Length: 326
Image (cartoon, rainbow, N blue to C red; front, top):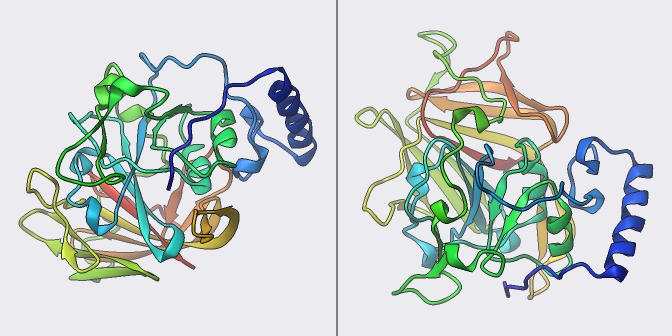
């Protein structure tokens, strides 16, 4: 997708923004002026000030996930990794960093409308991305987050060697944030703790989630006490040679609809609805636990509840959330 930088507001665009704000208010809004479901069309300008120093909020990075982009860098340092479907049935990742910042992350790619709703659970997160569809860029600029692209922060991004563009754009996180904000910034709604019961759940050796043109497989490793990740049938590795092995994998069944945005080839972008409720599977400790997920508003985190009404705890450590078509 061709990169285009956000346009600076002029008197004319300011007037247009004011008109859009009026429409948003009549449509029913929550705090920060965005719609109650967090979708982009009702976005309003974010609070003033763009400095990321001492923000106390997370860094989210959009990461390329086609074959030419692998192995990725810095993925194993993320606290949460979200996997979503994009154009052509392919997949893309969003890595969220709160407890530590790796030296580099990438390859960095473009943002989607679904990201704006997903990120509303955090307090003005920094979103690092390479660009977006031209009609979506103004909405990203108005959302309650800190958008950072190569044009906005050129000193934080660089082109790696050995790969063709666009699969060679990387980020130095420390040039966007002074320090990792800490675990308190992870306002995901996730609850961590012991498994529901010693004999609870179903023994599970592996679990595969399929998109039309991509798939993820998670295989339990007792040695790593985590789920070894494979992508499109190939074991995933970082540029350091390590295999990601999240302690918890959540398969979250959501509504995936067609948005009004599309790529240069005319393929419409799927919109992943992360506000609402539905079925989920929580994989931890070599077992699968059936659950129901709920997120009442875009500003809320997501909770997971078992059939008996009790919370389903996640294991301490990295969490992967894979959004699957309900």
